[in-house]
Length: 85
Image 1 (cartoon, rainbow, N blue to C red):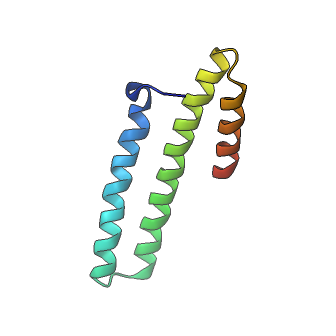
Image 2: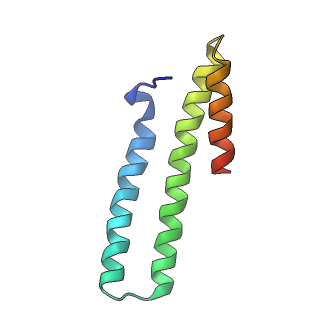
């Protein structure tokens, strides 16, 4: 199933922020920053990444719910959803 990029703007924006966070975490490691600070940033990046995944899945499930005959796609999305949970 193809989703329109405009429908996934929120997920894309979130992923762009995560990309920046990851770069910051790598820099923190290189600088020898405190492990507590590193873990806090890792947790924030992980949460943001998971939320982006849920946005993408939610958009896909909405498409499936609005279109008959997409049973295979529904099953694949449900499996992906469970892997994020």
